[in-house]
Amino acid sequence: EKTRHILLFGSGLMAESVVQYLLKRPEVLVYPFIESYHIASNIVADAKKIAERNDSKRCSYSEIDVTNPVEVAKLVKKC
Figure 1 (cartoon, rainbow, N blue to C red):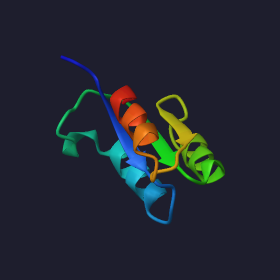
Figure 2: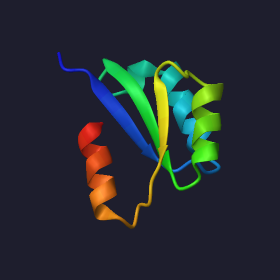
Figure 3: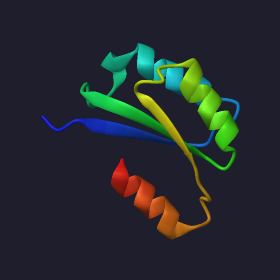
Figure 4: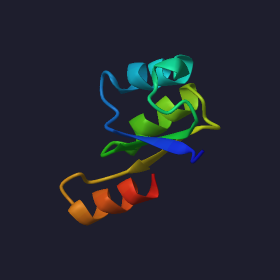
C-alpha cells in the first residue's frame, strides 16, 4: 500500500489539538498507513513548536503564504 501524508494548513488555536488527535487515534483515519504530518503556516515559529511538542520524527513544518497558489500547489504535491 502507498503511504500517505497529512498536510495541515495553519498553526492556530486548534492546530495542535488536531495533530494530537491524529497522532493518538490512527484508527479514525481513512488511511491507516499515514507516514507523516506536515504543518504549513504563515507563522513558522508556531508550526515548529507544534511539531516539536508532538511527534517530531513524523511531524515537519514550513512557512507558507496561502494566497500564493504556486506555493500551495507545490506543498500539496509534495505531501
